Length: 225
Image 1 (cartoon, one colour):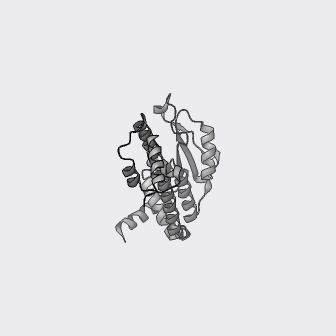
Image 2: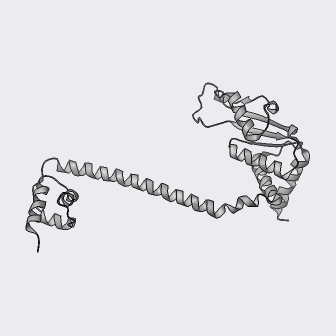
Image 3: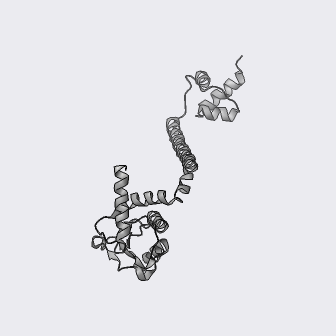
């Protein structure tokens, strides 16, 4: 049996322009929307109701999009945690010098210069990548720190002294081993858009022996010997 009082209250609320969700909330019920639609069929709705529904739908769409973004972010964070957990053991492999030398070689062959055979030259704008390269180099070889040189390639509006201090901390190379910074002339009178950009740090280490070893190890790896 249909509760006639409930039905009448629902119809009255509908005449006032309430949505089916609002009717259920106001009456503290959970009547199916299809049932409410049947009860309220043929009722005259107040002026402005269509606009109200349009705004209501927009609001719900915004909430749905926000919920979707939150859901995607949570899924992304969970996925990252899974990736870290599954691959954390790989870091331990770098404590093996043979493995470390393979990584160093590949890193140098992709980001280093092969033109200066009396030295190794490596440049990048990513502090993590530059730090990794130097850590591997110092781990795999006996290094004479006095043979390091560093050159910054930066934009015209950047503070060179701040950049030198930043990269000196990243590389462990003292400031007196820094060559004069090179400013890209194309950036003059053009403000930097990326405030996090620290320029390119180019590392020189004067050792023909290490250069030739890295090149030859790369050939061995590529040829699969």
